[in-house]
Amino acid sequence: MDKDALSFLRGSALVMTHDLVAGRSTPLTVTSCGDAHLANFGLFASPERSDVFDVTDFDEADVTPFEWDVKRLVTSLAVAGQTRGFSSADQQAIARAAAREYRVAMRRFAELGRLAVWYSTLDVNVMATDVKGSFDAAERKRLRAVLASMKVPDDRRAEARFTSSDATPQIVRSTAHFSALEPKDETGMTPDDVAAIVRDYGASLDSGRQALLSQFTLVDVARHVVGVGSVGTECFAALLCGRDRDDVFFLQIKEAQPSALATIRRSPAIDSEAHRVVRAQRILQATPDPFLGWTRREINGEVRSFYVRQLYDRRATVDVSALNPELMSSYGRLCGWTLARAHARAGESAVLAGYLGKSEAFDEAMATFALAYRDRNQEDFEVFLRGRPTEGGTVQS
Image 1 (tube, rainbow, N blue to C red):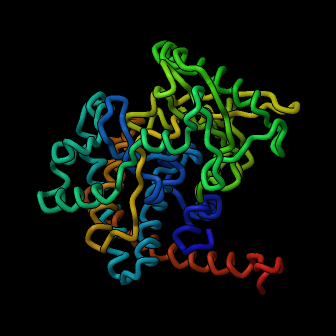
Image 2: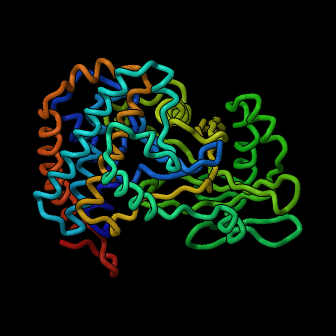
């Protein structure tokens, strides 16, 4: 989080949510992503193995005023522009374009039938059709350039890199990605606990996915080292083997914590935090991971909830350093379109479209907010740096 202002913003969803709760909000609520910054959109493989673009993170998912997700997105675009050295005018224009795309796309989704909205995706291979009416030929060309810069990883290569060549494959421990899960580590988790989670979570899948999962055998587990957005969360990896050692895939097991909103309001999920995450992803994401599911397990007398998904599935996120103002504007618009589609899937598109209207008032308000919160984020980031321990262990004054 101390790398730059954007990294700080990504890791401080709780801080921004606290500020949003304290401010004025509309009464129009949706199932929200809860953390819709620009790096929580990306490419991944659909069950049909097409590369699709969508929202990719739901740890903070909750029911919130719809504009909170939009504010998080436009602020992240402004802060990204700030870290890239763009002018304030460019940052404001980028934020305004993303907000406008959200508004215009919501009106288009409101005119579609419910099934048409639900089946709407952003398949990279047929992108021109998916965004027809939203982006002209020149803009679609820029989008292709942005998406091309998001290098989709070769899952087989990743699996080979982190899988041993033994007859029964094992996870290769690495300080950068995986580390050993001791028989009883500081979390109270054991390898047997992780194995039980993998075994039990299958009950949350449909019968077809259960049948597929039953064809694989769990062969190894390890602790998974996660990035900025998952600081402090418990995360594990499970390696499963099918027909032979060349037929393997990874599952990621993450312990679900209360969302930022629930933490502030001290209102934990009624059912399960992991169920909250999975339910939101299944609503908001057009092509959710077929292995996405959840379960609960009692560990040291405490019931904890975990969600499970594929660890590698051709996921790729945007490289902000590769974007100039024009490309970042196109990327921001793509995120705005995608966010509108996600919110529309919950069935409130007509109400939201009616509220947003045809004028540019919403666009301007979001752009103004983006720059104001960019400055607030910078102030918070500087306070964070001053309070960070130095190499000698003392706190900077």
